[in-house]
Length: 406
Image 1 (tube, rainbow, N blue to C red):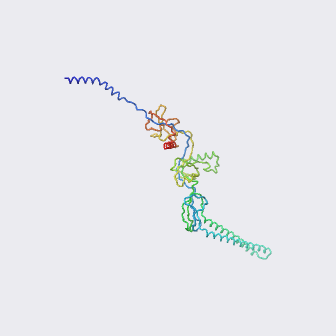
Image 2: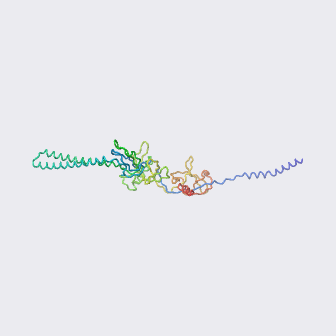
Image 3: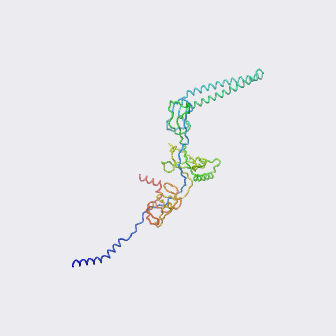
């Protein structure tokens, strides 16, 4: 009986506490909204930009020659170190000149002999002209004297020509550089006979200054370039009957595979006469001074080439990591004055110092999400933290890395 009484009193107490227990459970399950996600925003960097056409090309030497032995003879001396730089006219090889010096002396003697015969024939002609007036010789004798003089005169010319040829051959014993450039290895060692049956290749020289770059332009880009070309011609008053690409000064910029940007500047120099119907392109050539020591541009290198076409002021630029894409296209996320995220579809342009030009869809002063874009949702609220877009440029990142290293 006592146990039953205790149990009944316990149930009664539990009944009195149950509403308070339930009220406590309901209060602990109340939903609390999470704080808005933190994102980093930056205003677009506003800069004057230039539209470029970009191509890929190959560097080609502005001149390359094979240095050959133009006369037969024994290679006597070599006057250069392979792989060095030579100037036009520098002495490279000497072929044994003894035989050719002797030939010159023989030719000189032949000239003296022929001139003596000419003098003798001239005197005979003068005597015949005097005697014909007196009637002491026949007309046939005079004609013979005139013929002998002309033959002697021709013999002098032939002897002088042979002397000139002997002098030229003697000059060929000194093999000189026809152009300036970097000389290759010697193909023939000293002591060997060269030029016996053909003009033996002794070495080669490659010109590095200037350097050409060849690349192909498609039809659409070609028409844009021609319009720029015609505008330059009109602006500068260039004589269209003598116009050249260099006079119009169509600038080219070049970068190698191991270089950032396009550090080398040149000019459009030449183009083929028409578009190749098989490829729909026209091959053009740029010229670059390459005045480095030693030259940085070498023949046969892959080159990135760009051509400035049109300047545009006050264009917004943003980092590429702020640009996303969906089925409708490319977009950026913008935070408005109420910290609400808005989606802006954009049309992008070229890269400038690591930032992408926004051609349409964005204006100056708007706050673009540059970090935390995956946490932001259009229409949602975010907690923005401001940064400077200039810190996200390629040059800004390099400066920051250098400062951290120091």
